[in-house]
Structure formats: C-alpha cells, structure tokens
Amino acid sequence: MITVENIRKTFSRVTAVEDVSFTVNEGEILGFLGPNGAGKTTTMRIITGYTPPTSGTAIVDGRNVKDEPLAVRQVIGYLPENTPLYLDMDVTGFLSFAAQIKGIPSDKRGAAIREALEETGTMEVAHRTIGKLSKGYRQRVGLAQALIGNPKVLILDEPTVGLDPNQIREIRELIKNMAGRRTVILSTHILPEVSMICDRVLIINKGHVVASDAVGELSRRMSKTRRLRVTVKAPSEEVNPALDDIQGIQRIEAMLLGGSDKLCQVNIDTDPDKELRPEIANRLVGKGWPLYEIRSLEPTLEDVFVDIVAGDKGGEVK
Amino acid sequence: MNNTWAVYKRELRSFFFSPLAYVLYVLFLIVCGVFFNMYFSYYIQWSKEYIQMMSMRQGMANQMPNYTELVLLGLTNVMTFVLLFIIPMMSMRLLAEEKKLGTLELMMTYPIKDIELLMGKYLASLTVYAVMLIITLAYPAISSIFVEQTYWPALLASYFGVFLVGAAFLAFGLFASSLTDSQIVAGLISFAVLLVMWMIGFVDEIQPGFIGNLCNEISVFSHFEDFSKGVIDTGHVAYYVLFSTFFLFFTLRVLESNRWRG
Image (tube, rainbow over all chains, first blue to last red; front, side, top):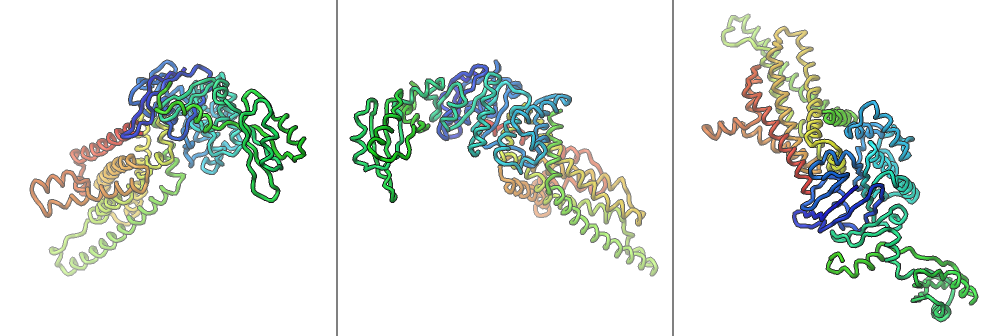
C-alpha cells in the first residue's frame, strides 16, 4: 500500500532523514518509533506530499507522491503533530469544510460527517466551537477530519501526546479498531503504545531505520533480561544472600530507601522467559520480612535504544 | 473552483465570527466620517463666502464650490490613505495565522491546489474590503438628499479606483502574510512597504526628471490621481490589476517554497 524507497531529506544545513526505506501492506498498522528529532515527522510529511524528499520516492496506493500529489492526498487522511485545527469553527462546520475539499458530493456530505463523528465519539460536541473543546476532544476532531472521506491510508503523528490516561486509552482503542480496514502509520515515542496497537514496528534514529520488525519479534529482541522491582522491609545487606541461589536470576541490586520505615528497594534482573515472582515472594515472606511490592518493569523505549542502537554507533543500518 | 468556494466561505466566516472585521469597519467609518465632516464644513463655509461675494457683486474673484469634487472626491482621496493603515490589519492574519496554528500543513495535505487555497483567501478578503467600501457610500447617499450637486458617475469611477487600490494592497498584504508566522510582523511588513510606495510618489517634487517619473510610475498612489478626478483610465486599471497579480503570483511561489523548506 505504501512503499518508501531510499528517502533522503536535507534542510539547508540539517539532514532530517538520511536513507529510509520500508513498505506497509494493506490493512497493516505500522508503529513509527524514535526519539524526538529522529525524522519521524519528516518521513510522514514526505508520504503525505507536504514536503518533497531531496531524493528517493514514496509510492502510495500505486501512485508516486511526486507525480500525482492531488490523487495521493485524496487517499490519505493525515493528522499532523499537535493537531492543528481551525479553533474558531464549530466541529460540524469544520468537518463539512474538510468534506467539501476532499471532494465528497454535497448529498453525501451529511452522512460522511455523521460517520466520522460516530467513529470518533464526537457526536455530543458536534455543534461546539473547536477552540472551546478539551484537548482530548480536539484530538478526536483531528482524527475525525482525517477519517472523513473514508481514506485508505491514515497517517497519525503522535496522536496520543498530551492526553490524560483515559483519553489515551480511548484513542488507542479507536485506532486499533481500524486494523484490517485501513492502512495506518502512527508515530509515537511510547513503547507500550506500539505493542498495544501496532502489527509492526519501525524504529528510526538519526534519520535511519535501525530496526523493523513485527511487534512480538521486537520485544523478544529487546528483552535479554527481565527486570523486577521489589520493595521489602528488610536490612539491605541481607537481601542479596537470601535470593541469589534462585535459578535464573542474573543480578540483584538492593538499596535502602530513605524514610522512617526503613524500606528496601531491590532491582532484580532475571532471564526473560522465567516467571520468578512467586518464588521471590515466598523467600522474602519466609524470612519474616513484610513485602510491600513486587512487579515486572515494562522495558522503556530507552532500553530498546540502548539495546538496538548500541551496536549502531556510526548510524549504519546492519 | 469548488475548493476555492469552500475556502472562500470558511475565510469569510472567520472574518465575521471574529471581532476583526467589525473593528476594522468601525475604525474605517470613523476616520472617513471625520474627514467627510471636515470637508463638508469647509464646503459650507466656502458656499457662504461665495453667496456673500455674489451679493456684493464681486463674484468674479471666487468660484462656486463644486460639491462632488470638493467633498466626495476629496473623501475618496483620503480613503486611499486610510487604507494604508487598515489593509495591513485586514490581510496580516490570512496566512500567518494558519502557519502559526499549523492548519496550513493540514490544508497543504488536503486534495486542494495551492492556487485554489490562495484565491479563496484573496477573494474572501476582497469581499470583506468591498463591503467596507460599500458601507461608506452611505455618506454621499445621505448627503445627496440635501445637496443637489452629487455627480454619481464621477463618484463611482473614483470608488472603483479606491477598490483597485485596496485590492492591490490586499494582494501585497497576503504576500507579506505568507512570509512569516507572526501576524504582527506580517502587518508591519505590509504597512512599511505600502508607506514607502506612498512616499516615493513625492520623489519627483525633489528630483524631477527620469527618476521622479519612474518613482511616480511605481507608486501605488500616483496612479489613483486620475480616478480621484472621476476618470477611469485603462492604463491605471491595468497597473492595479498587474500589481495584484504580481504579488499573488509571488505568494503562490512562497507557498510552494514552504514545502521544500519545511
């Protein structure tokens, strides 16, 4: 559905994208991961035809973005970063404007608007002024304008940034429901988000694709260890000897927390495929130490980068 | 065409849903009203003197004042000067605001050609401006009830000239607005440049000859002089149309360059 080949984009002095190539199949949801300034937004802008690449080609739905920009824009629904909207318009008025420009004939416009409002759950704010809506609703209106005209491709630049946890969950749910029906590219720098929504992940760093994998594959790759966090009321120097004979533990690091109740925080790295929490809990409780917390830490994007980018010092794709 | 219409409607709504259009209308009407009042009092004074002279049989020394020429055409002349301040305020938000909000990125990824976007915006601002001019026709319309000397053809020819001046200013204002994402900067650029355009009209008083003539030909205001006498000269009409087209074309180029400059 989307093919990007050897895209390179340089601004007057800065190179935003060095050499990016990838394909997205029809109905697939691709997660774009990367730190700020990695080239995510620029790559997305190239696909939407907003910015022409310095070299390389982008093909959407069989058409070259450079040669047929209007035809390509017709099949793409785009939500730019920070959700720019006309704040002085009401939601319906704005969607009707978008529908008109996207070439939906006037007799079908009402139905198209209703469909977008329903899909994004913005029916109840349909007649409110966009500038007076909460951030979460604005984000949905942004999604609604991207959805109008039923585009085959959706490109969403950080759709969940700045939302409260509840809103984030709702937006994720919404995107997830599109799987199979639409081809989606979505950028984020929140790792769990990708594993929740996306079929495939593409990690970009310094203008290069550093990893491209199915979601399961990527988490397997990044989890050479699994980190557990334990909080227990115990003398910190006695924790290590109490646990270190358990099979599968790689490293134990105990540290006394401040405060009057003398709690001890322990970070434990274990083999990724082992579940050692019950045994650890048993040991600690067996010692008569009150156990406050035991949990598995989600690997952060930072961890992945340390893992993946470490062998990528020159920025070369291997 | 359809797309231009959509942008046109959106832009008009935006003008009239915000206080901007109304503030500018009120400002323009107040300033024009003050000048109208001033010219009108002057006309009355002159008429009284004329009648006095006539009764003393010394009428040869003084001409009978011409109402249309003195008051109404005088007013249109002042209007072009007031537009120097009003138009930058009207045009500064057209593109700068969309750049700041980021909605320009949205528009440029919609299936709409740059020229359709531009024309929608230009025509909308032209409409807002034309409405403002039409409202000022209330002055001559009301005064024509009391004064029999209103010569409408000359006045309308002059109004046509004012419209062309404003259209040219708007085209330049739109261009200035495409250069920056700050409305204030856009407004200042268009005001400063239009002010220079006005000032170079005086160069030939200091430096007559080729340079003076050249400056006169360039100046937006010197081409209005014939209009202010109630004359429509196609040469001057062509000047304003070309001026507008020129800057609209430049704006289009700036929009395009925004794409590759990011």
